[in-house]
Image 1: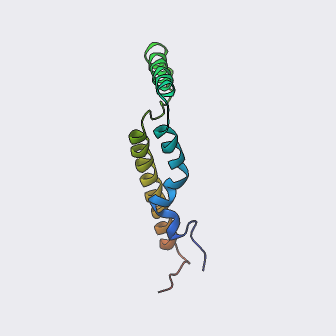
Image 2: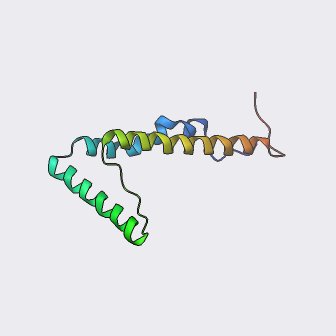
Length: 98
């Protein structure tokens, strides 16, 4: 039997999100000055996008926004992995053990 590219546990969103939750913790523990600097950087990036068409993705500025972005991205990644595993088992020459 040929193994699929990921195990079933590799498709779980909570496991995919674990490495990124450190960023949420950093946002939660920011000081006022750090929050102000992040807001200023986001404003500058938006001005660059408006004036010159330079597209730079603005990082999440709050822990809630970071959690939401992590949840969305890990859900997309989990679905893509599940589709890859499903497609793997639908190919010829691969059989499932019941």
